[in-house]
Length: 223
Image 1 (cartoon, rainbow, N blue to C red):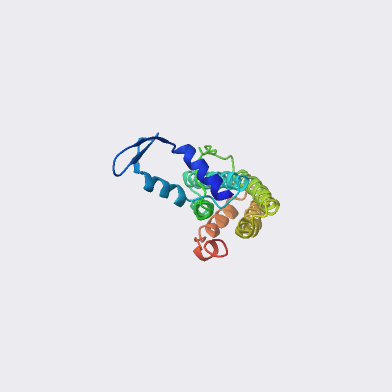
Image 2: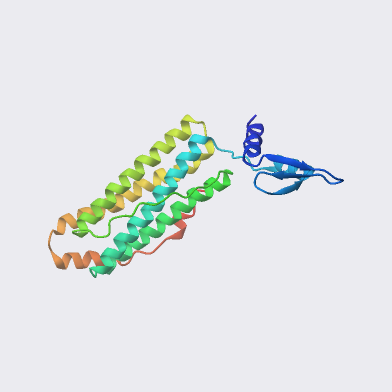
């Protein structure tokens, strides 16, 4: 039934307008394409039908957009810290942005693997300045809380839809969000502890400069 419905939708998108006679009759679609009649019928049968439900498809699309916004946000933060000469903070956030792009591509590839059409929506512009390092990381933590809530909603939807493939795929992100919140909170607590101590801020900046992108942590456990 799903295949028949998918073919019907494809016919609606590319309906035949007329058939040109002759020994090799052609079908002209409303999109101006000509196909031999047999070929047109063949294309209807090999059309890739999505193997994912509509609700899950739309939800994964929205999460892809959120992950891309995360990339924008952390790049904006990295640029801000570079401007105020805290290169270690800038490095840490640049690495964070790179991880978010990897997360985005996981959702992108998951949709493609499920034969779902990928639509890229507009990405909101993030803030460009923050009044202090603490304010920036509190914003980062608040954003990760929103991402965590979204991932949890996706997981619940996958269970409700009995979409086992999506459920397994999302397990990695559920675990990842625990780490995201923990790492941001650790920096927040350090910044609260030092207060206005510039020397201690310099020490934290030097420590954050040591962060490198660990690909192994981002390329396993999820398709």
